[in-house]
Length: 325
Picture (tube, rainbow, N blue to C red):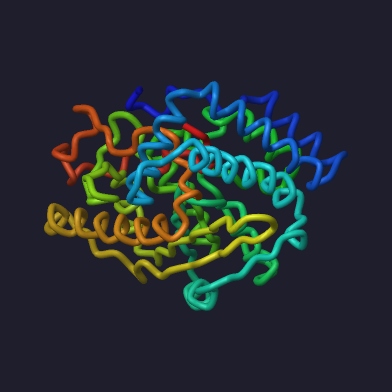
């Protein structure tokens, strides 16, 4: 199995995403959900690397061998959140039963008059975070997202929510340009969201214990947060079946202190803290884990021994558009 998740194609590509969008729009959510079963079966049967990665992950998370039904449930959960994305991006959040925990902590940080970094992961649905806009009218949300790498998702976003698409911070830019765009948005009091659990090939990482083995986590997002001196919140939008979602926010830090003088000790400690929190949420909702590749496998370019004191170049390179591999 390739260690590079970026080499794996999008699940179904443009045709599948636009097909499900068309069915959802004209047939409704109930009809579209029925079609998720053959779509899931196709994915499980055809996408061998993802199927094996799913089974390997589930064995870790469940503490037992994962059977075919476990893998089917895992992929079906992913497909269900992709379908629901169509409705969420269309502003139809009222369709869903969303429980929210920790939102007061988000408001408390935003009320300080500065922007907030919202770090998410490929665990559950990041789109459900849009409910914040309903709870706090006028909130500016900027998403760090690689437009070119996620072409199908980009086109879907532009079709369903052109206004939001226009506010995307393109992660395909060079590192300094991304950091500048993030800083500019934060200075305007925006909430800047990005996913921080995957590292791109060659990107500096730190190894942290995760489900029984060390796994590589990118360091760039944490260096950005420390450099910009802004609060960091964690967001988890867990799919609980049917129309039910649980949206949880955690304050990670009101302001990280990672200077060059203490980076060798502070940076691994921060990443380890994040990995522990992600693990706790993952164990609470294992079928929400949507990293369908060998999360623990590394190569020399992504070795944890690489310089943890490196700069923040390449920050934000992790696309916020979720991919199955």
